[in-house]
Length: 389
Image (cartoon, rainbow, N blue to C red):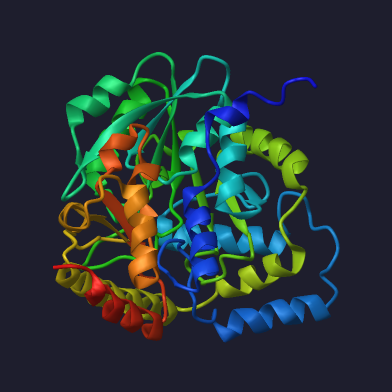
């Protein structure tokens, strides 16, 4: 038989989703995949039911229902300080996942390079390969996850088509400062490069951290694609409603790719999403406060169990150094440790190597998520005491 696609041999299936499957088989505590195990807000559930009952059950406008695009436009004007035309600048997609790959397919030509901060969300590597781009990685250095200005500047060249900025960042919890984003923006303008901003955790911030959208900075509106979703902010990761905001010429191309990828995101859920975007500031404060308390509790439990970790500024993950526990167990790599952790405690985590191009950089790290109900988090704290000290 003829050979199958060679490109699919160059990357693996999602390690995060694999750890969820392993956890489910073991009946464990899923601190690997970033989805809540508590109920999504009743109001958004009821909005979806009303939309279904109102007959919004057929194909939507391919690039997004008008009500949702208008709601997105209003929200990003108020919160992100981004001006965008809902008719020409927004594409509603099947989650931020599709928004990212559709954006890359709309931008990339053979020979183009993209810059990715490392450690990175695991989709960015395969997305680069599938789009035909060559990735260039710039290291984020722990424990505060800063980057080297010299290394960043050296990564840009005539082939650089785009840089991906994920802020707040998965897996590190880093929130890029306005000064850092201004430095990135200056390099984008100098090298005529696009910025792809993955801002899906924009409302999950701690200790006074502020979210800044790079598209709001001088000279960046026309060269930034801002990607987001309702998944994390409204705790509906299974709904698959996201979007990409870009200038009209970029949006036209994203819409073409999106049309032939998926046709459209779920129609009734788009209408529910539009309603969710009218929630007042008290909703976002409640979200932030809940995750802030969960963060502090989980980090206390992890440190007590022997993990080394720092407080994340945003998102709901903590990337830990598991070296000491691995040494006590006689384990030398993160994947074996993650499997052993499920065996000993039932707690599922993500091997750190899945967030690096050079897998050795994450071989002593594991990532935990804390977007879980208190019952789950308290059980986890209890079972982690089973680890050798």
